[in-house]
Length: 67
Image: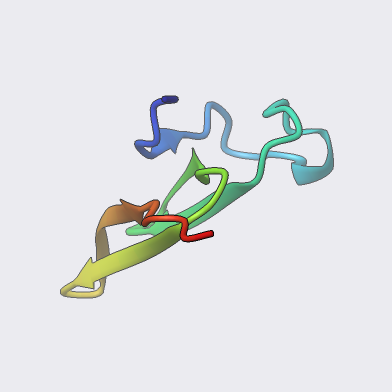
């Protein structure tokens, strides 16, 4: 599985249309003046947890698939 932790954006100014992250879906999080991103899992649920007006963590729950 890929590293699903938040990663800092390397530049202060980014062009989202040319951001080199491949074709996978991403989530961008701006908290406390810092912009970070993380890839989203192929399926499941992602929760953004905040505390004292700051993002503290992302929770990934890929769940179970019933067929």
